[in-house]
Length: 172
Image 1 (cartoon, rainbow, N blue to C red):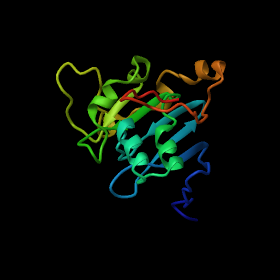
Image 2: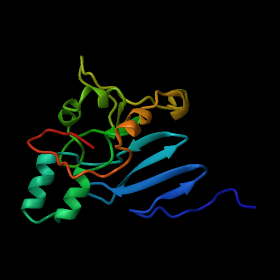
Image 3: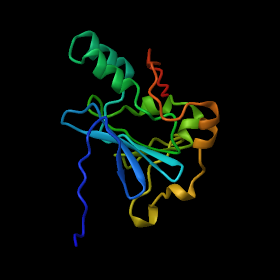
């Protein structure tokens, strides 16, 4: 009997494990990094991992030929809007998401957002740093479920062709 079960995470393929379904995607960073979405018991969470999430910068990287259109579209359309819990990193650009990008998010997204990869936010900031340690565990089965409303509107976990422009960050 084994104490661990290994299942490879393959970008673009659902991974089912222990009753949950994971969807992995590459993020934009100086070294290869991945983010993921997990769905479990009707709830969902997205963890961006290390990621430079700046729509104008992604556009520029595409325009200069550094990113293909497909790769840039994938980065613009991370499935972050339709989730019960969003753990999004922030830090020093150009390898991490500028805090200003997260501050521009719609209020309904910020209510479900915790910032990771930083220990402090500016005074009066309407964002929250993710709690740490086992005492700070966030349980999906104990948070409000956003999915029911999204399912009624028909937007459950689908990629969107909407893109982010002019510094506006709207995820679908």
